[in-house]
Image (cartoon, rainbow, N blue to C red; front, top):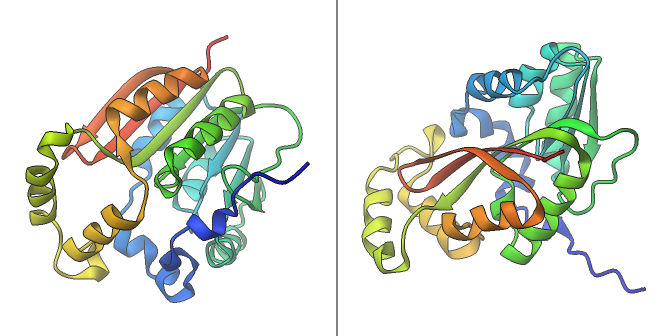
Length: 231
């Protein structure tokens, strides 16, 4: 049978494959994992839990959740990210973390289903068809009652409002690319990546079998979801 799966490295974005960009990634993204750790702890993640960090990047969330659970599987498709992730795991002495070089549709999970999946800024890298494939796979990795915590760039707007929305979004961008994303970088994202509408992503989450228990949109451009696998 022919292999129908995509090569996810082709969709990862050239910047995420660039070691120099990766080295400055955490300062640029300004990500604080505290709220996500609290959200998962509030949903039952604890000392015996296994957490899958899908698209772990340089390991900010992995390092933050590892002290609170039994095991973390940190997965990323970028070789540069994986090198940075492994270096962080070693430097922090995170003995309960396993690093895997793979992606949304190529990760091969062994063992029991996981208790929680975390994914941040990964799903928008692939078109909607592959989002459906990926979300269905993530559902299958979770035990019944397990939780998915998902962040992504999602447009919570109507098509007729897109031009005005883009003007407003870009107006709030930073000028210094070392401390966030510039208007030019946001425009490149819109042109070349696969962020989708909230009113497409939410039904897709539900279609594959998730129950959305919490959702939040920031500046109509960034979605945060807490979802549960029924069971």
